[in-house]
Length: 88
Image (tube, rainbow, N blue to C red; front, top):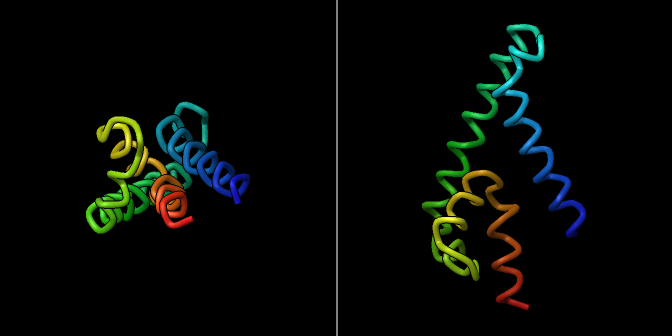
């Protein structure tokens, strides 16, 4: 499960990087626009997760601001392991 979690986090970071630097990398305009739309939808979904699952986000042992940032970047791939750790 942990390998899947880190793989999905890497895919999130790759999508963010491609959306941010797609034009500079010479990707077609349509692809860059699609990536940016995808990233916008993902970030909005993660913002919704943050509101819905804030008690779980607060379980992170580090600073709350870092947990919020990680939730915005990775969504359930950040807060779900926190929930599993408590329930185990």
